[in-house]
Length: 159
Image (cartoon, rainbow, N blue to C red; front, side, top):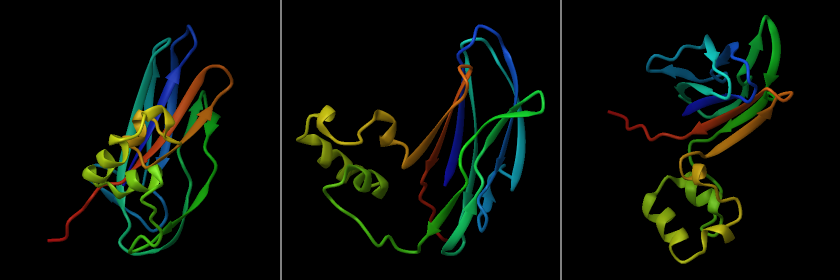
């Protein structure tokens, strides 16, 4: 999985922010990711930035996830709600009539077949970013910052 934290400064003043991330319990970091990391970012006025981290779950189970939070001058100004992730070995529910399920399958042929004969604006839950994101959460801060967290599934092959 990859989690991406996107932050946007909608104020006329540059912001110095610290973004704290950590992978869910039960997960192992991939690539240059670590269990927990703090990123420093100066976001220009009306600008945005993003950080991402990758991980995988070696076994199924229910795992706590404490998502990213954003601080400014030592004060937390945004954070998503903690959640519990239910990791399964095999997907147990799948509906070929649900756009969310078809996208989550990651099968490009199924996705293209699903949208081929439908007007895109009539598909419940459709957004262009949903073609890349399995799920996402928005955090809106008091008039200065918008944080979007996306979790993107990736396919890993065992050797």
